[in-house]
Image 1 (cartoon, rainbow, N blue to C red):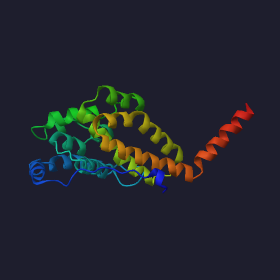
Image 2 (cartoon, one colour; image 1 turned 90 degrees about the horizontal axis):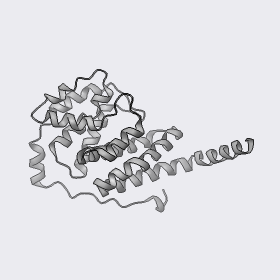
Image 3 (cartoon, rainbow, N blue to C red; image 1 turned 90 degrees about the vertical axis):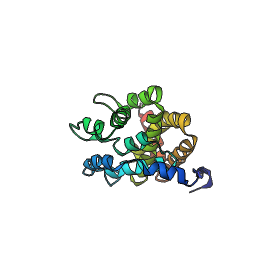
Image 4 (tube, rainbow, N blue to C red; image 1 turned 180 degrees about the vertical axis):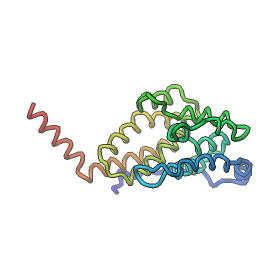
Amino acid sequence: MGKKFDMKIEKPVQMDTEHMKQLKEIFLAPYMQIATSLIGKQRRAGGNMFRHQMDTLAILIDYGYIDSTLLKASIVHDTIEDIPDFDENVIRTCDYEGNEVCELVREVTKWPGENKEDFLKRILNNGSHKAKVLKCADRISNMISLGFVTDEKFIERYCNETEYFIFPIALEVDFNMYQELISLVMTRRQYLEDSGYLLRKERDKKEQKNQN
């Protein structure tokens, strides 16, 4: 990887005792139990959606977020969207924060009939601060997984989507997440260049123009 794609990412300081104690008091296991319903849902890059929930949780903690509703929502953020006929009351009655957690999950859920662009615009324009932070952590996880995807058109579309919609969200709520997302997009675009995809795309475009 060339130096032009290297970017220094400022990481939060190591978790201190105060935050450790705060995290200790957050009961995440009931939400993990709900999320195990996603174990059977495979991901394009391999693994399953349950692991993605855990990865999103870890990214939030990595960036210093210890908010209980945010962490709980990260663990179940794909349940409503990806589990057929999922009963959201399972989240609402999970514990005393269940209603707040469910509302946050609903914010980051793409609803039937809602296209991806409108979904991301909704979060960008109307999402709460927590929803935006959660979406950024979710996208960081997805962008890392994109490194195992070889579908070049999908990679290009996902990078474009990240630049158009997720960059502005991250820039608003967490500059360090924004920096990491930039770095991840750069590595994926470098892959498209190294694979010859961009060259082939430009050649095909010229050929189509000549035919017209």
